[in-house]
Length: 339
Image (tube, rainbow, N blue to C red; front, side, top):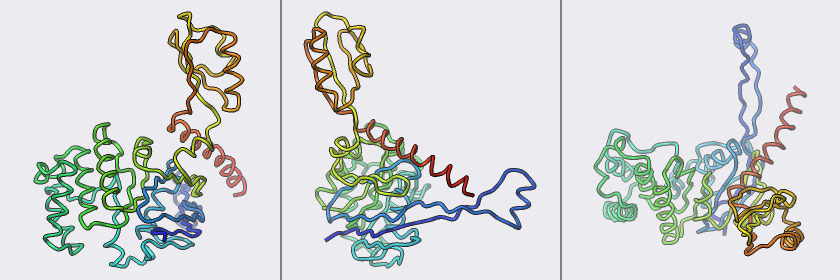
């Protein structure tokens, strides 16, 4: 049975269009112009219990809006959604005790107080039994190695330390569903790795259902087997991580090691030269032409070693986002002409 169920879920905002200039501002007092912006467009999705799902998309694709709908912060324009059997925007207390939302750019801890004070507040809000609270708190502090920091004011903590405290606060009531909106944004490599390791361990131990948005593909590769890609408010892919490359990548990378200590001058004839450090070179070539191009290169040049790889996941995702943006531009131009 699915823990998260979305059926044709949509959210549209009505945005005021303000023109430049004093005259336009005065005119706007009496006759305002508005534009409907579709943040989420009839998306349908099921997430099973214990899944760790990456929810990806370019800025403005509808990721955060979807998480806010699922957490009850927003009410949809149309469609249905159920999380753990609850309709999120009804904001039932029974539902609030079963999920948590962590937003990398929003703080839920009191800035001038030690994190332990915020933890106590969460205990009261969620009605956590004292022994259970202390056991869960201590376990999370040890897992994230921040016990020595819990008495410092939050404002004195580093960004990575604050994010660890945010995660602890969100998990004190042992939620069954966790929504993570860019939890590693702005963190350095070490802090990112620490957060990834914690989330992996926690999810495997608790079987928590997690929906993650992130612009760091290392988060996705380290944590998620399933990926959902949204663009222009529409789901354009739902499948495995490896399936993204199989479906969307149109090129491969050929790495060559030449035998005569130099790189031939005609490599550009075979593909895009993306790296050249004699006697090594890398070419970006169409997937369908790999076999023929390799045969030609091996025939024409002395090669000691060769390897063929897929494009990096980050590059494939970037190309998907770029393509979505290019498809959106003509639609916006047509809408502007129609107005």
